[in-house]
Length: 281
Image 1 (tube, one colour):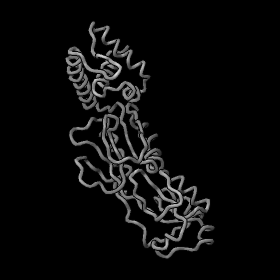
Image 2 (cartoon, one colour):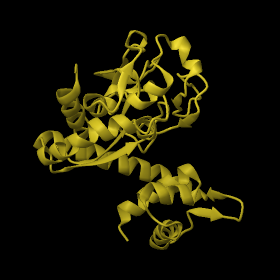
Image 3 (spheres, one colour):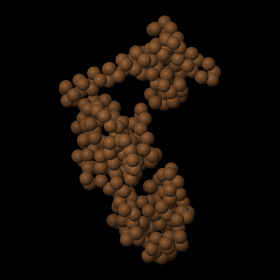
Image 4 (cartoon, helix red, strand yellow):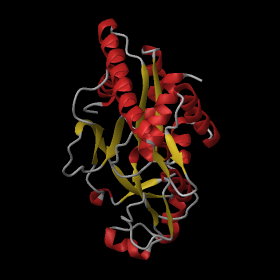
């Protein structure tokens, strides 16, 4: 087995104390995680982890080896980053997390061009609507909405306008509301991204998928409040009709977020690519 990879697996196991979680992180089976640990133990001639049915703890040798592995892996990362700066050839995996709808409609179409421009960079594009959270599996994060106080570096990528709309057949049957207060008399279809916040009153249908709401509205299910970006094709074709335009919420800011401090060249390359394509749009 690759010794460096086994060291990385060992460090993750030592830090997380959970074989299943580490297996998911490295795209391995739990059995293979165990094989990496045993391979190191056989090479070193000593036990690194004391295993019981309830818990896993580091042996004294394991604690010493963990500290050394961290230093060695950090040094290797520094050497690779310095070589990248010297050669000006960004390389490596960049893990980018974005909201589902924005990621599908805006970020995904840019990926082919990014990869073509930088053949040594690989991208792991993760799409979810979770709140801001950085961990070892995220390098860059795109989020929509007010950030509040944060220690993260925030680079603006523009704004995200929302609009109320419904299908012509729904409006013909139920009438066109002239004020948001009248929405309580309508069939509302609501988005819930996990925060529990709902922008439409008493939604008949609630989902965490903007596309589901779009399809339901196209079928005449009711009124939705969704990003214009998602709805523009249906608005242009007349399949959906914008309503209550004077009451649409203020466009939400879009930000690219990353940790403060020196960034690897691979991250800086992706940051500048996204800023060039999307910044101030």
